[in-house]
Length: 494
Image (tube, rainbow, N blue to C red):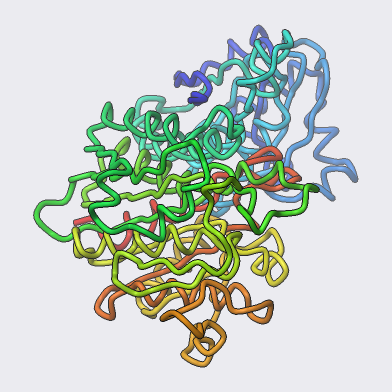
């Protein structure tokens, strides 16, 4: 797993500024106001900060953004990063400021951030940690071996370093969960097989998570035939991994359920070759569940949370499921598989039912890179949110907004069921092109009990992106870990 950058917290020492190597970051108010560290950096650099504050460049700089002064006079640092941040900003702007600092830092070099006594100093640290990520596991260059595009270490200088370290600790625990999710989604499928995925999840035991791996014989016994149908064409064995965090006493848990298709060729309904390499991210829902479980365990959440992921590989072979096959789900409903490339809903159908039968959750959220249709509707900025319960849905939307993770509620309704009718089975697994993301959600809802508050998150557009975001480089974003952690923290912790 990619580790967070080495972080240390020290009390403010403006005498150390001149000798700090790599990059030094200071805060400058929109009006040019400076704290002690910024004033010292200004003196060391012969008034460079004052000149910047009076420039047109600074006038155009937005709150939370940074400007870089290269090779500042009188300082050992190669870069002086100046972030524009009001004292009375909100937490999200402070987080963006931290991310801007990390992005502007020198790769493979140390970074020193002077936060003084800023009221959102912990958020600055959080943003810097989130952005200081690089996936270099398969790079062999010297640059990659030395840390890639991220700083080698981060020193945070604050008026009360001990208090800041304590306040930042739970945020950094969540950031470590985000890193786990990014690593899993970025990994190629020949490395992250179903077996390797399950083995990585076993490591959560080190944080106090109880982990069980259900293999094919047990899945057969449980009747998870729709899940097994997806993976039967692959040599990689299908698995369900169950992760339990017991932090909240005797109450029923919140259940997180993830689609974990480690590679999706489409099966017999083969996908076009162009872009198929991106289907290494089709386990994105399971990746987010893994990261969220890591986050709640690492910060010792006072809640009961169970994560369940269905791990399969969808491959064409002489043993693969055919279009037109009929399979009976664990629930007992029969499904006509019209299109083997609509496989994620088959995986989730059985795992959702199992989660409810075994754990009787007080709330359930499933995540899946489920449909291309959601990308057509919402692009790469928002996930699709479907729910049978306004209370849990509104709570999630509030959490996602607070964490700047884009989400938009989509409709459900019995009128869409007509598109899923099958001539020979209880239901078909696809409903045609119209409303494709909605009919997929409607299919899933069939496997949700009426008494279970439930959310389906279609994350096909947000799990992995081609361009960098505020808090992540191009590639896997870790979308959803922060929002789910906040949902649990605000709504389910005692």
